[in-house]
Image (cartoon, rainbow, N blue to C red; front, side, top):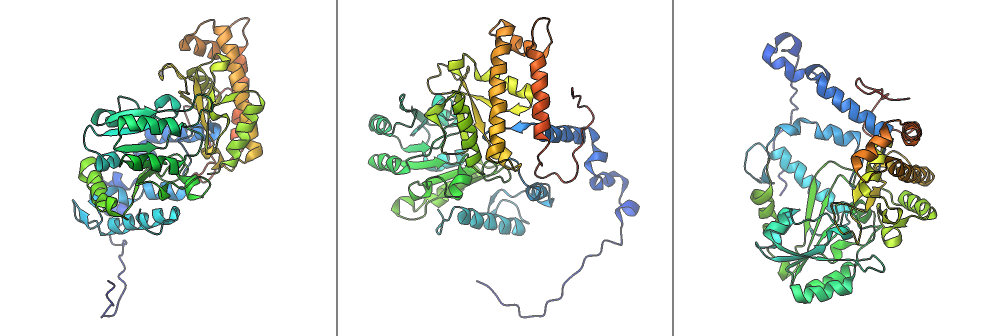
Length: 451
C-alpha cells in the first residue's frame, strides 16, 4: 500500500568538501581511493592484455557474449560491498532495502522480457526432487554438458535420452518409450550444443503421462526466446532456468522462473526459494550464424542436424580425420576462439570429434551476414591448415601438432602459414569496436606480436 506524505519534504545534500581525501584521509586508507593502475599495475596489465586479446581476435564460443559498458559499471559499483543472502524482505543480514528494490526490479523486468503476465541450476533440481529421484536429460555426446561427475548425477538417478541417428534430432518417440521404463520424476530439456529448437508440447505429454515435472534450461537460447524467434517454453514447462550473460548479453547471473497456477504448483514458489537460500546460495542475432553455417555447408563440411535454428552450430570434424582438440588449438594460434565439443556418435567425450561455434559475441561487435561469411572463410582456412599441420607433424599427439604449427622447420610450411593467417585475422578483427571499452585500444606491455 502507498502511504501519502503528511509533511513537507526538504532535500538533504551531503557535502564532501570538509574532508578532501587527499588532505585528510588516513594514510592506511588512501589505497581505497586510488585507481587500479596505481594500486596493482600488474593486475591492470593482465586486464589490458585480455582486452587486447578480445579486440584482436574472433570470439566464437557459443556460451560467451560481450556485455555493455553499463553492465560493467553496475558490476563494479558500490553494490559489491553488500551481503544479501536470502530473498527480498527476508534477508539474513540487515541494510538490504535498496538491494530488495533492485532484486524486485530485476524480477519484474525478467517477466517483461519473456512476455509473461503472471510469474511463472541445481537450485531448481533441489526444489523439485528428493535425493535419488529420477531425472532424464539429453546425453552428453548429443548436445548437453552433463557428466556423471556433476552434482546432479551424484544426488539423483539420471538416464540420458538421445538423438535419432538418421536425422540427429531429438527422438521424442524413443524418449517417451524410455520414460515408460525409467519412470522419471523430472524431464529436462535444453542443451549447450544442440543447434535445433525443442518440441515442448511433446515433452509435456510425456511428463504428464508419468506425473513428472518438465524443466527447460534455456541458458543458451534465452535471448532468442525473448525475441520470439524460438518456441516458447513457458507455455508448457513447470520451471524455466537461464543465465543472463549469453544471448541476453547481460551480467553473469541466473534466473529461475516457476509456475504459480494450478494445484500442482501451489507450493512451487516456496520450494524454489528454499532451494536457492539456504540450500544452494552463498555470499543476439541468429541470421548472421545462418550465413556462417551456409558458407561451411558450401565447402562440404558436416554440421550436426544439417544446420541450426538458434545461435550455434556443431561442426562434425570426423569425416576430415581431425579432432576437436586440434582445431580448437589451431584456432587459438590464429586468434579464433572456439571450443572442442562431443558430437553424436562419439565413442568418448574425452576425445571430442567436433567443435561448437556461436556468433553472439561477433554480432555484439556489429558484424552482420557478409562479415560472418568472411569469418566462415577464416574457419575454412583454419581447418585446411590443421590438416596440413597434422600431416607435417607425422604424429597423432597434440603436443607434436602444436610444435609443427609454431616452430618453423626446414621443408615444412605449416608454421609460416599459421603466422600469415594470424596476421590476416588480427587485421580483420581490429576493424570492429569492442563493447564496454571507450577510447582507443592500445597494445599493452607484455604483448609481443609478429606484425
